[in-house]
Length: 192
Image (cartoon, rainbow, N blue to C red; front, side):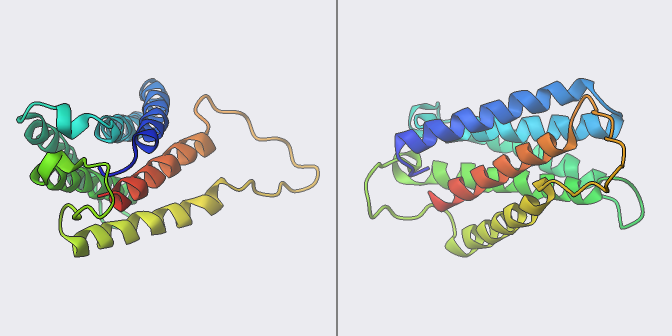
C-alpha cells in the first residue's frame, strides 16, 4: 500500500483489534455464527498483515503468493456457503466475505507486481492494479460502509417495554467490527 507509515500502523491496530474480537466469537453461538466469526477474524487479521508498512517490501518473494492462495481458498469456501434467497441463513454475508477475500487476493497480487512491492512513500506513485477494478471494489466497500452505519444506530424502545437480554456476543459490536473492516478495505483500496 502507498499509505504513510502512521496510517498503516493505525490500520494494523484497528484490524488486529477487530480480528481478536472476532476470534472471541468463534466459541459463541451456533455453527453459522461461529463460521461467520472465523471468516471475520481471517479477514481482519489478514488485513492487519497487509496493512503493515513493511509487508511487501520486507516479505519473502513467496509470501504474496501464499497470502493470495489463502484468501482465494477463503473466497471459494465463502462462495460455496452462499444460498439463494430463502435457502438459508447468512447468504449475503457469505457473498460479502467472498468479495472481501477476492479483493484481498487482488490487492496482494497487484501490490506484489508493483516496483518496491507497492511501497514508495512518495507522491505521484503509479497506481497498483487495474484502476477500473480498484474503483469498482472501492464503490462496493464504500456502499457497504454507508449501508452498515444506520444498523449501528440504537433503535428507539417502546415506552414500558422490557429491556432485551444482553447476549454474550452483542450484534451491534459484530456490526461495528464489520464496519471497521469495511473502512479498512476502503482505506487500503484508496492507497493502492
